[in-house]
Image (tube, rainbow, N blue to C red; front, side, top):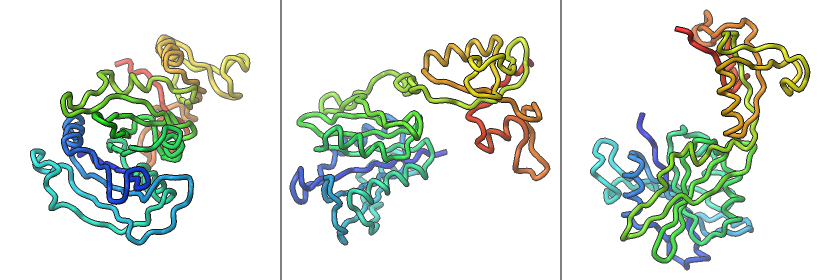
Length: 287
């Protein structure tokens, strides 16, 4: 599956003067694309300005979409300007944020977003990111053009109900090119902020068992189960390290799951996942 690449460049006329788009250098875009082995498109979203006021409708607002790299020939870079296409859109502060959020929500988790935030202060950036439909493994990056460097940040949410997290991960300069932290994305996002997972499990002693709790303190939810066994011990350690909580249940048929006669729906734990009744299913394959 090809990875789509969207770059959203936020344009502030009030900060940079009429006609100044503050587009990042092509070398920066090229380095970013090569760093992430990306193929796809770049999305430019120019804004008239960023402020707390609702900006009147502007008929001249436009969005330009162009390829960063040719889908069949990665050697062709952003210089291939024959791929430019103009689309008419309404762009004020509210509609632009809504547009970006809708696009993020409609894409797969393999998409990359590079959003320009030059000239904006941190509280404003965070308040806008809070409106985005982000998830834990989204690849959403932001750049701030400074005097001799472009500072690179990443943004994500551990859950839709949580605030956006915004942190610096690197920079770019003409002399040093792109410098990004060496740690993996999962290492930077290990704190799950106490979110609760709904888990289904099956009886697989001695590795994994689930029993009705003797008292409320064993679980935290009436009618749920307490998990035990060697595999459960590992999971409980992860719970402490990654800062999350969970409640345990079992499928009514106490089965792993199989395709039903309709050929679409599933039974067992797989069916619970399909119906979004649980966040994960846990079982042990003894083979």
